[in-house]
Image (cartoon, rainbow, N blue to C red):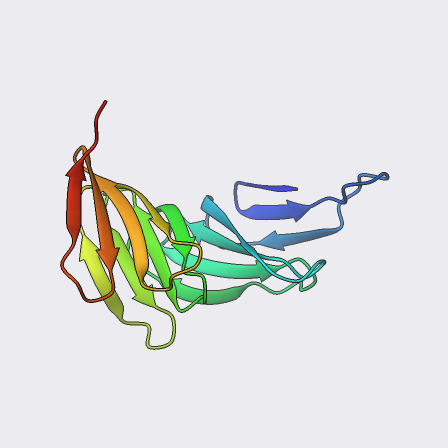
Length: 148
């Protein structure tokens, strides 16, 4: 399977390799993040050029809108308990959206990449301007220069 243009397509792993399911969107797909889940019902986050982020489940034909930002999405990640969604847009702005309140919990500019810790809900790293930054809960951001 994969995403191209305004759609994502699911193909089975075993023959016959025919389209099993397809999801259509209102704009081009720009970022995809596997979200895990039970076998056959795994989730995938899909970020669009309009700033919309959808969650699709392999066993469901209907995409679910989970967040919207006003920019073309470049990268996504989701926290382990799925309460927070990190979005980096093409203007290199990072927004961490609380999925329960829809509020932006954290904002940073000039961000190149983002990743949540796989076990701790409030722990994430992002790179920006040649530095690696660690954000842990409400504590101040810790930074370290990245050695080339």
